[in-house]
Image (cartoon, rainbow, N blue to C red):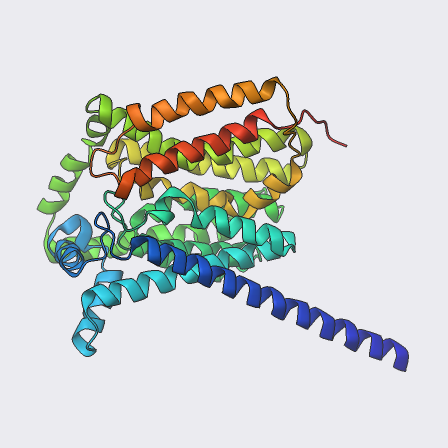
Length: 397
């Protein structure tokens, strides 16, 4: 009996030690990636991190009704400016980079819960950190403002969702919707994932009501704003919103930019899903795939019809659904880089996509310093093509 208790204590100590090491690794890795992102933006001539730019953005979010209703970050910035000696620029940097740091950590925590594998967690964080709209978050024309705060609430919601702590999941999803109303898009994929993961296929009135709470909260919030501001500005906003499709495909350059911004967010996850699909026959994989595809369809329709696609961050939401599994998909599939005809296909693709990235695609508002956007698009496509070309033909074992 004594031997059994001692063994149990040792196992508990070992488990706590491993957990502490995992948490430390997540914190250090997240800190490094946050610092890399800040260094990339700091002092960049094409970046937003200048006092006059941030002041202009804050003023815009106080004066234009469509932005004014997204008031969480604006109120935080103004509060800090009023009660501390910190400038709007420094407050903006502190809030957004703190939120980004915790986004990385929460994504790592989600990954550990799902896979219990630190390597996969770090791969998932890296995928998120080096996605186009995070790496260039504060460049023109990404125009990130309160999006990272919304990602943090969404990831916290996801963290509690996969633990079946539904009330906390709905609470954070409601905050995400109030931060940025486009977060509503993820309610249906979240509902689908929860139903499938916890085997509740039957329509539960109780659960349906819980997932409706963020929508109800937002409706009440908008009614309050209507009573304060009137409805005229609402009509003006909708007339502007319906011009999205026309603007996104206004001419050849805008059309190429729109399609490219969609691909640099969707292509890698889609290729990994296609690569892994023949090897995984579990229902869980199908559910994750369906949730991601559902999110990407809903989000893409909203962006194309009601927003400006060149603001690439608008394509990010579906990636929050698939990010906790990207590392495992890279892990499952084997690749063959031995000399073969595949190399000729790859080299030909390199030439073709270089031509596309530098002679066909061009951002219609600035281009990042030294063509950073074009270099990113080129290497992103090359990475995706390499995964497709060099993947081994395998069957489920």
